[in-house]
Length: 171
Image (cartoon, rainbow, N blue to C red; front, side, top):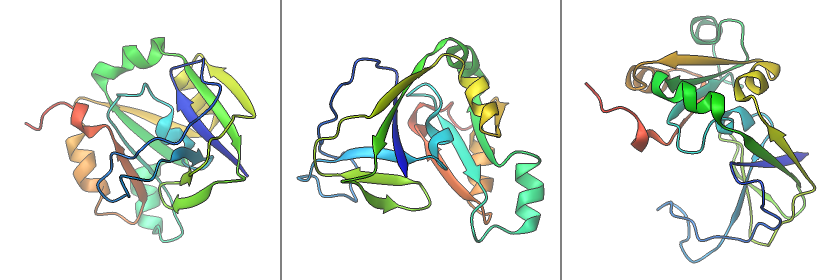
């Protein structure tokens, strides 16, 4: 299994464990974070771009699939003000061997390692929208994320909300 780290920085040679900022994790234990391929689309955006992402999981109902997924297997929703930034941002996809990583959150696709990791491959993504499309991910553009943010949490879909502190304020 391959694991990934997405960055706007093309120069990372070694990933050293860093202390987590999340209050639910041990603040004294440094971690290297990686994402599995299934949840990789959640990170194929500019770093600080707020987004609501969702895909079908084992518990997803047919009704939720039809209502929210349409023809894509995965959806990434961003605000319209981020579209131009997305079009002009290059991302670097660092690939890791899974040795030394443990599953941290299955639904989110998070894996962590307490030891220094070196990528086995790095590739550039120059066209983020194309990279999403190639992965059967629908990119949706909205004025505000808050309505979909609230609705998607009541469904049977697997979802992730990233960088919401940078989202437009609720109206």
